[in-house]
Length: 343
Image (tube, rainbow, N blue to C red; front, side):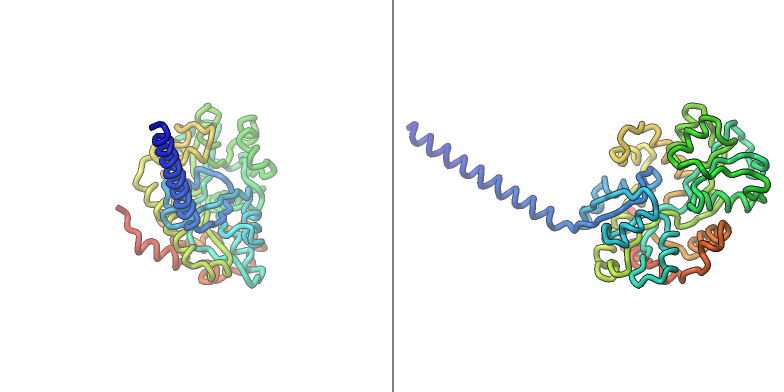
């Protein structure tokens, strides 16, 4: 009897081992059906909430994509990662695509989807001026951004539209590093500061500053942050680009249909150590200025406005405007919008 029980136990053990092996093989097979796509993002920011929502909600995996994300910490660095083929897709401001096209490269970058449609910086004041207008900055010191960066260009574009010229009737401080700007303002540098979230909300929270205006709302819609790849990768991987764009559009739809609290909860794993209440407030502020694009389609008139902003800052940066049809391919975004319907 003991011998029979021993044989039976051995058989059950073998069956269990075979089952476990088969299940493991099945899981491995499922994973290998996902195509790996290397994405380099310019930085990690709540500004890009629809992308993180798309990842956390599984929309990329639904489309058969396994994302491998790296962070460039600079638009020029993100562009270089794509051009050197260390990344398949880049995510940063489209000005880099404009500049590279004008260098006459054979395998130039092409934009195919946008995520944000306005500059994301807010003007912070030391006083809670509920009747603020841009003209009141005359004679003041404003803590701005990096010289030649789009945030600084957009700020100066808004200033000029209100009769303010840096170096003439106001002073714009541009020698403070992006990461050091919030602390510099808190420490007394500048009467005003143009800051991104969550720095703006953090200053408001501890009563060190007050949001009085939005650079993005004043500058108007532009394709602020977009996805791009090289012409060769796009030509050889059309199906992958389409599926990637589908996932992004699903994320955009989801964010538009869910509350600030729900979006914050969905993306909080990408911002470890950040208070969920702060995330909610940042999302609320970005929604208020329509920073999140409703769909990935890049509009020609908005691209023209971005080129206006660049040329008004320094015409030497953009001596020639590339044809929209060369640097933008809306085929994938149009397909996504036409086939994926909001529920």
